[in-house]
Image (cartoon, rainbow, N blue to C red; front, side, top):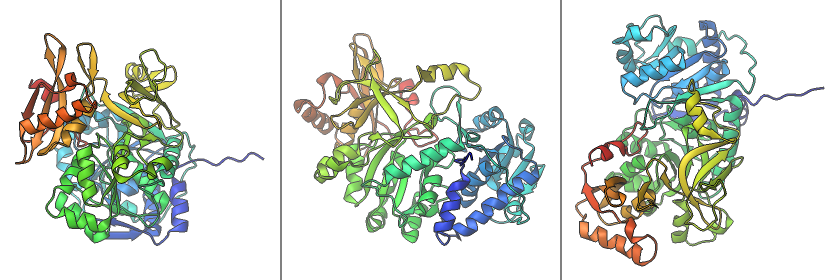
Length: 530
């Protein structure tokens, strides 16, 4: 007899509720429910969506901060047979409209504070069949029609049977947050998300993260951004207490970390920097012995070392919107565990090793694998079961993404003797001076350890003689001294760590950096001002 077991998202809940029914999901310490109650609400919502008219394959968008209701949608929408579209609420209104229209969103779950954004351009959103609105005050605005109260749906216990879903059905869609061109849509099936969840959970169980059910996790990766790095699925699968921060605000985040005894998080470097430089951070973070996964930008040595002084274990992670996202993590293999702490920092800031089920290569222009010598630069190309098949309605972009069955990331990297990857640049960010590449990420890492430097970004400036030359932009503390920074970098030249021609021709102090919607430094305005 043929047996088939579909790898669908509901299977995460089935196991977790059975094994950890009393585990807690908490929203800012204001609302807490058990896994068992969460499961009931998810099934109620999935059932209510179908009764509302949602059909298999319909797109259901969400506009919200990181709340318990968003987490419910992460499960309920795919379980109803629909496709969850996590809308980037940090986009300008024009791009919010563009991505929703481009995705063919038909139903929208929306927090009340985002209603005015839509209501003032209501005619543009005529493609939406139903607005599902909620408010923490209980008073739902009536400016969007046809509308329905979210709480009415999630509290409706007159459930209908949920449809059987094929594991290859699309479960989620979202749009890239790149700094060039219009956002590109990607999508992922139930099976892809399940395999990503299993692989990420397996690798994160290694030191120094050592993921376990006693951890209390509060991800600080927006839920609209690349599945929040998979944390809403990985954490529930592992049976952890899950804390949702709402809208990001550093004092509130620190208060919640203390109140909920958070031990684990994931975030971009700029969020980590804002946390550890807050005056109240030292005691709160040190007391919790936190473990933090840093991605969406380079984990610079200076930042990792500052975090270490507060007792925080950091590792780097790497991935893309197109890869669901995790490809590598700088977890410790046996030989790294046996090193001293200073040497381990060399590895915690590397891009890492491929997680389970990821086939990753670093190849030169000739398509051949580069040697493991920590200096030969090549492009990262990958195969895994959870890569997006295409860009939504963009055959030209899809063609550039895939070549000979491999996804080409556009990221330039080197490999060390143990197989750890270090990204040295994006192809589009790389500086080519006198025919040779200058890896900006290595420069940024070294400059970040100089006294008085907070954040740093290196970009290329056109040069008549060399083609391009590096310019370093920095935000600084009162300790900053330009000559000391130059001397600091000279020591790395003398030690053979960097070539002299890599050194920036100029340093420019800026008050702050423009950031992308996901917290990365946006280099585009820096180049435009050169």
